[in-house]
Image (cartoon, rainbow, N blue to C red; front, top):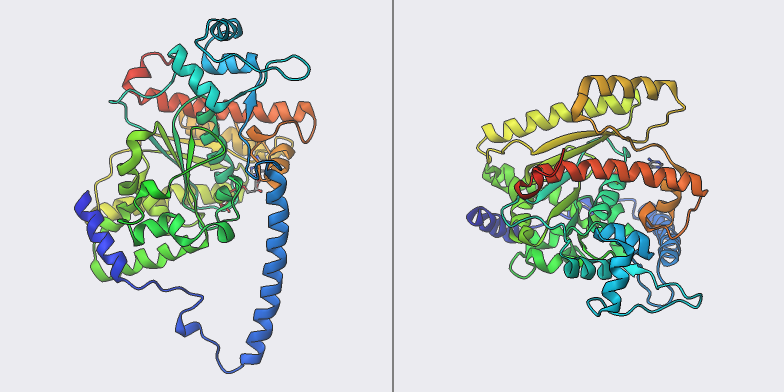
Length: 424
Ligand SMILES: Nc1ncnc2c1ncn2[C@@H]1O[C@H](COP(=O)(O)OP(=O)(O)OP(=O)(O)O)[C@@H](O)[C@H]1O
Ligand SMILES: [Mg+2]
């Protein structure tokens, strides 16, 4: 493992990055004046767009701390999340096993944060962490089709695991960085290239994977962020393959995860919507795959092509001398962006269920205004303090998100020897 990694490192340090924006081939040709005008117009648009982004991002931050705030829960919900009763928590607070609880002005216990839930689990012995011999779940939420809900599912899934007390690493592998934004960053303003996987691969000694992992507002959920520079990895991996005819480079994300995975129960990767080098590296790194698939004809046809391309690409990699990848621990399709008021959606969904059977998660991610509303506030539905739509719409949306994430959690537990016998 390490030798390949070092080979990759040497190459990354010697291979000059081709930055498409500054490459001499892209320098201003004859009509400089026209280009300047174009540049000015685009520059202005870019600056204006950044102002809007900043305004939306600032709205998601706590005005006092200037940071995003993680969720907190009343005692009844906290109790169910830590696996004890509310009276067990009250008793532990009385007898000093847990710190005494402050009260709000109206006399209620102050809500419990994720960090406090983790402390409670430590006190009660209910942390759900895997046993050292259990294989951490490394899940890629993949589909080469754009806009099918990959990032939405990846984020909610990662937060679902963190809320339930698992140690989670989220890796944003998409240079569009929409997931990174949901953690409160303006990716191309607040982060440099050294803050992402790109920086790590250029300078692994200085920027070991651990140094690019960030704690987030969501306790228990760490992040490797992305920004636009990550896109350069596509060219660089392709260049490396052409020069070296060595396919080890495709294992770069797998090797990065390998060095830190002991600290985690679950790793969730959010890949870009393309069959590129980074997507392949993600597929190689994962030991489980979740495929969001909207039940519309075009999206479904793309999903079918994705499954075929993923299969043939990985087989070709093996034939060309890449690592022989063990089978995924589980592959699950999830109906996404499902609109049950459309007869075609209902029909395709029913066909998907018949054909895929147990490979398909029984619950689906329905189209919900709550998801759209939350994401336009740079939040997930799990982060909303109150419904943006109605209580009914909000609760329905939380329910289907929970159902899908719960099914995937059970898939993970089935792969852990220490827990498998307690499932089913
Ligand atoms: N179930 C849903 N209901 C309503 N809106 C949704 C739903 N799922 C996703 N969206 C919205 O659709 C848009 C695209 O979703 P998302 O970013 O998750 O897709 P993606 O597959 O990651 O896209 P890309 O391929 O560009 O990475 C987002 O604005 C998201 O909020
Ligand atoms: Mg995405």
